[in-house]
Length: 368
Image 1 (cartoon, rainbow, N blue to C red):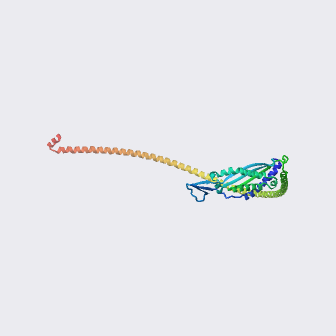
Image 2 (image 1 turned 30 degrees about the horizontal axis):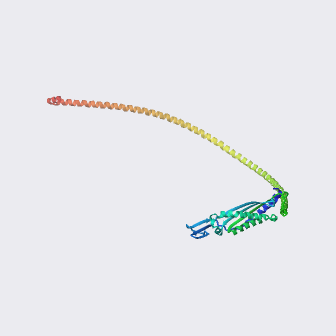
Image 3 (image 1 turned 30 degrees about the vertical axis):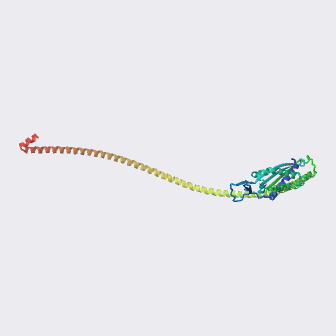
């Protein structure tokens, strides 16, 4: 669409947005029951239908039917004024059947909601078309579509309530217009209303843009002035910072000089202490080497003495072994001599005794 459509359409849409809060505040709130159920009793020719109460206990002769809250959406597009205006309609209906409606439709209790959708959708479409096609002039263009949306929603609510159907309806209308030069209208008042509203809208838009430009220019000047003052403050602050930085650098250099002097003195003391320490280490090393050499020589002397002692002990051991062997030979010879001497003495004694005995005893002895 061209600028004419963009202008008037945008105004209408913005008008809808402005009135949305009002629409929400004026929507009728029915008392929906999420868990609504019907209880049907039939005993012989007698029957009864009622809303299921709290604490109800189902028996074998009871039949339960649910009445949930459901949504019905109807979307339409109507062309008015020989194609000059196109209106997109979006109707959102939230509904719930009541006990009275169920009593009036006992033969379709399991399908009440589907019956409502199929039975009333065409009727609601005809109602919307009738409302919009009845717009013979362009007064609604001046006011916007809010009142028209509210009227359609109210009429739909009224229709459903009269049929014992609880409902909540929201209606949304979005009109759009064709280019003015290409339209031939049988009714000039609609064209004039649209043209007037378009002129008012464009004029208001130009004033708004001019006001915004003026405000932007003033804001720009104020911003530049503020920026210039800020630059001055920044320059002054930078000079102060540079002076402070120079002073800080000078103090840092002085502190660094003092630190270097202290460090030099500490290094001198450390060097002197290190030299003294190294000299002490050298002295300790020489003493340790001398002591080690003395210990080594002492160990060598001890080893030589030990070797000599071991040799003497070995010789003494050998001599002791030889002495023991000599003693053993001497004892062995002595024992042989004693044995031989004892044997000789025994023979001598026996010989002397035989010399002293009588003859007969000598003969007996010889016989033996």
